[in-house]
Amino acid sequence: MITASGVAEVRSACDEARRAGRRVGFVPTMGFLHPGHRSLMRAARVGNDVVVASIFVNPLQFGPTEDLERYPRDLAGDSAAAEAEGVDLLFLPAVDEMYPEPPLTTVHVAGLSEVLCGASRPGHFDGVATVVAKLLSIVGPCTAYFGRKDAQQLAVVRRMVSDLHLPADVVGCPLVRERDGVAMSSRNAYLSEEDRRAAPVLFGALRAAAAAVTGGERSGGALRRLIAREVAREPRVALEYVATCRPDDLEPLDHLEGDVLVAVAARVGSARLIDNITLCIRDADVVADLGVVTDRPESEVLCAER
Ligand code: AMP
Image (cartoon, rainbow, N blue to C red; front, top):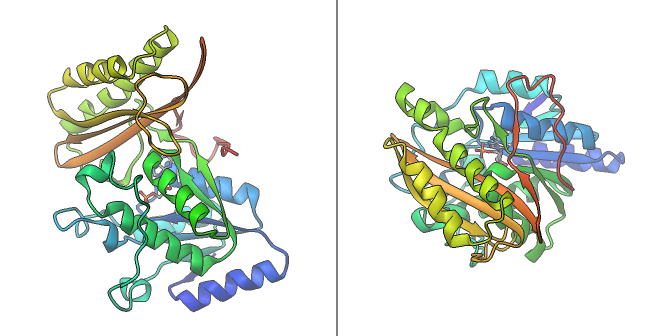
């Protein structure tokens, strides 16, 4: 595995790989890698000749009162994990390399960025869209892998890539969970023992919602109320929002039919956690994508969607 910190070095390595006819797969991350990140690297490894991963804690996507300074970092562990997953090129840019000057040019995906998490994190998705556009510009034509854990981020990135004709195929990969159902996240490191014990209530509520829809529930309002009631059973968890919406444009859905994203965000102690499931509803048929569970990343093969 080659480690690079410069834009020019990464750009020329990717150009050279493509000139030699090699397919480039790209996995952008903020590091503190866990099996969710590793599943993206594995999907990229299976589908490409050269795998590029980046670790960059992007200041532009953190609000002034958010956790930029204390965001967990582990460069040695991350390098070992990336190498074990077969990453060929690990891009570790400094903030000055990505933003030599405060950017006057940013990307705003209207409509998708203000709702759900965007309502309490103004500017967050502009920061995400801007850094992903910059990273895709550096890596060049590639297949880029994102987790469905961050369903709104995936919708924003897909729409940006489409609107700007960026030369990337975006692949959404399954949400990876801990054994007790908690969605894996670098931010789980912020949870105290008691908060960690309370956190599974979110997935429990989503699973109850999936069961209700399988049992015939088709009202978005009733489903959202059911989730709020389930989460309220755990006083340490404060629900910020629950949404039922279309996965691609995040349009709210009150009648549940077709593909439905059921998404939640909650405060648990000092952490803000998000989680979601996707339901595919065709008349009486319901297929629920609840994510995958693994604590053995090395032995589990995860399939990317599309
Ligand atoms: P982050 O480092 O949090 O910016 O995440 C980098 C990439 O990993 C994003 O595409 C995330 O959606 C993805 N990711 C993070 N956690 C998970 C998870 N539990 N399951 C699947 N993908 C994940």
